[in-house]
Length: 108
Image (cartoon, rainbow, N blue to C red; front, side):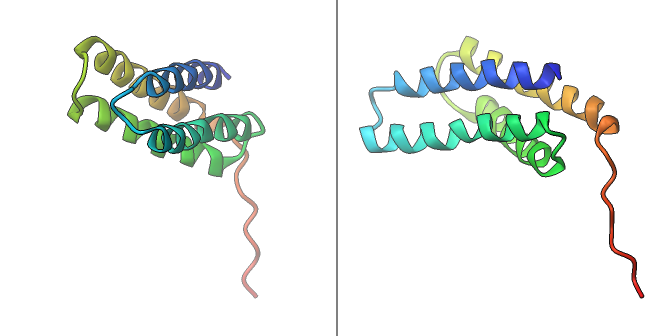
């Protein structure tokens, strides 16, 4: 799945960016890196066709797009983050049809 490859590259870039933000305290940088690193876990779940992981990735990418548009910092970095986040959302939407439908219990 191409979306997972893009997510892994995006997450690695986000981690490097957060690690380089020296205006943040060390504890805050570590906490942000742990939260952003959860995308690796969700990407692995998406590879195993987990609908919950894809939902989590939608949430992460949506938040990243909003943060890129509303945040401060270099316009090039924010534009790249917003573009990649929107591209990942589109790729995930296109791939939803390949996920298995859930088996719901019968109501008796």
